Image 1 (cartoon, rainbow, N blue to C red):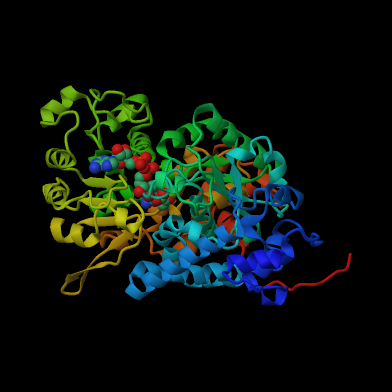
Image 2 (image 1 turned 120 degrees about the vertical axis):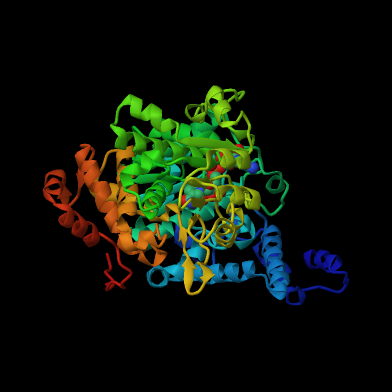
Length: 618
Ligand SMILES: NC(=O)C1=CN([C@@H]2O[C@H](COP(=O)(O)OP(=O)(O)OC[C@H]3O[C@@H](n4cnc5c(N)ncnc54)[C@H](O)[C@@H]3O)[C@@H](O)[C@H]2O)C=CC1
Ligand SMILES: CC(=O)C(=O)O
Ligand SMILES: [Mg+2]
């Protein structure tokens, strides 16, 4: 009877036994209503076993029975939906591969690396470390952005944990589904602002995975002790809400107290299981980024490198030196910032603090430092006339009366601001590709600086405010240029090179994590982040800086990161935040001089070497 039904669906009336049933239907006939398989595995072991793995098709009861809750994206799919997802990705790849755009080459490279990551972590990280210049743009920006945009299609084997709005009340037990007894580093996102690509919902998991790859490659954090986390509170991205193949919760984002309750529960769960863990918040939309930082930073070991302005700070100091001035001239720099989201405001906050420190560290220094910044957002120059101003932008709103004297007003356009201010630095954290148009760059030619600096910091590549070619060809050969995603240097002719620096937080966060871990600091202070930024700035030699090289090449990331970590440790000690850790209590830590601190750091970095394995029958 059953085979006859299938026969009818296949348009044949004579199908009578199982041998005639095509494979895809046989699966259905044998599994439907039959006895369950006994498995002697649970948790990740089952996901890694191709015989038993069903991926996103595990039901909620199975996920609970087999300790799988949190190890998969929240959606439950049927086999057919899984096949549709696979086929969609397959066809898209086929079509694009024929057309040959470079995006697909980088995605294909990502797939190859990802499969290696799933098979053999030691080999994966050895390859990544030894070829970081070639592979960082694949596992990190820009390709990671493309990976997140296509994640529902690319997803194969899960990596990391997923906590969703439907897991409220369950997180404390779910966290024990993660197999590692010790976790040192968590990178968490809620997917609400992935690079400059906006709300990508659950697909944002690619970012914590990519950042943690750099923690291992640059800082030597043990890959068995890192945990990428996605907190899925829904998405406001209409395309994803209507996409039948999307892997996340198809509901609008939680907001207000409901949202905070989920994040609170997550923080409570992970710090209960791993009290010494460090949590890096990543790519949270500006609406929540500062609020969450303020909420947790005094009670948990956490930070948010996106909004604490460190990497740009290091570049700003480098730019002063490249202009041939002493670094203490930094408080005289006129800085126009395009973008008043958490990244832009994070930079102006950090830069203002640094200027104030150089000027004397008192309230009046802080006040006067504020007048070095002009912040422009989508509505133009921010002044005290702005209606409903974001409280975090308020301290940087220019006084309209003062602006009048410069011929500027509330909402003045970026080009007007650049024309009137004639800044030393034009910094873009707007997520708007091409924002530094020819007109804006032309205006920068009148900068009062002999070497104006252009920071096109938005990621990924297509979101950069301008390309280095545009900057050098319009403003002139003498400029300093940095971008968030990698670009090639520019050939200026006659053997001269226009250096394109990569100004990316990857030079900071791995060292902050490693330094915090090895110092056992209770919390992560502004001073520790400032120490990291100053260490990065000082890393560059005078002869490099005069050539316009203000950030190291990525090939040196594993040299610079231990130094950043050592600077973080020493600052944690000086602020009395260090509590030491197993094998190095705080008294011993305090006895180390600079070199001793650096060798302590290096000794504690994981290296990709195969360990000898021994089997023991318990
Ligand atoms: N290079 C690096 O290490 C880092 C780069 N970023 C990048 O910074 C960018 C911004 O991040 P968030 O602040 O979180 O984003 P956001 O979306 O919160 O802020 C964007 C800001 O740009 C402004 N904006 C939009 N259009 C504009 C226009 N036409 N003119 C002037 N301003 C305009 C918006 O009003 C808003 O203030 C992202 O692309 C991100 O990838 C973030 C952190 C580190
Ligand atoms: C680099 C980075 O963290 C960002 O673009 O958000
Ligand atoms: Mg980020």
